[in-house]
Amino acid sequence: MRILVTGGTGYIGSHVSVDLLNEGHEVIIIDSLINSKASTINKIAKITGKTPLFYQDDLTNYESIQKIFKNHGVDLVIHFAGLKSVSESVEKPLFYYHENITGTINLLKCMQDSQVEKIIFSSSATVYGDSEAKERTETMPTGQNIANPYGRTKYMIEEILKDVCASDPNFSTVALRYFNPIGNHPSGLIGEDPNGIPNNLMPYVMKVASGELKELSIYGNDYNTPDGTCRRDFIHVTDLSNGHLAAIKALETPGFKAFNLGTGTPTSVLEIVTAFEKISGKSLPYKFVARRPGDLAEIWANPSKAKKELNWKTKLTIEDALKDTLTFLENHQ
Ligand code: UD1
Image 1 (spheres, rainbow, N blue to C red):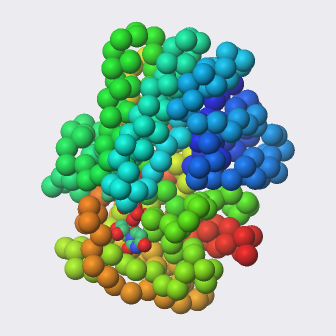
Image 2: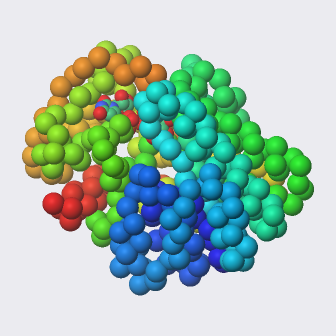
């Protein structure tokens, strides 16, 4: 199939592009490079032996995105492109709504113009908001008590996709709700490498391990959890990527479907630090600081719907992810 991947040079998009090329699909990447690098295209080519077609463009540029659709017969779209910093979204909500929402509307309009009716959307566990239950299932309500504009853009995009599916009986959407992706391709060539000071845990750990940043601040050790630090469902990006390949089949039936992609097991922030120290053989400087506003104490996936309907489950461990992270670090020093 000819698959258009938006955000294909980003962390998750680059891993999925590799797997799609290895499966024999043709890949066309659109990425604005706002938070990634053009050199990722060469790395994808080095891993797969195939070079994806690449357009540096932003989805808010309707006319140029429309041209890309007109020039290529696209079979389906995998939509990763979007801004994802929680703190930045609080400071610049309109920027986030414009890039994420307007960008997605443009993409969907271009798809409709070119009769492309299949899309996989990179959604997030954040759509569930805060709730009493720590384990999330797809039947739970979404959109309530979401703590920030970034999270609301993911929720709103899911709602837009539901409306598009309701208006067109042939349109099919799979929203994949990611929990906390970590690790990278075992080659260590591609991985999470955000521009600037990272917001998320693993990229921060990596900068401390490489000596670029002095120490990790662990946000809160007074949560009602086994060791007092937050617990998350950390999933190896390779497992996450396989979830996208499995989702392609689910697009054969029209309508909106959502699936959790997670392991089903929570791990604490402190456990991640300790496991990283063990695998690297070096201590990782850290200190406990105040809680980060908006953080949930615990959240993990119930992944049984994806297992049942997509025949997908995770295979890799936290240790696998951390080993691959070390390879990535060694390659980038
Ligand atoms: C956040 C967003 C989520 C988004 C994801 C990817 C919220 C509540 N969470 O997930 O919507 O999909 O990023 O962008 O909106 N931590 C530290 N020190 C650090 C960084 C993180 O202790 O320097 C802790 C956090 O407090 C948290 C855990 O590590 O408990 C994971 O944080 P992070 O990697 O930012 O992911 P989430 O907050 O789970």
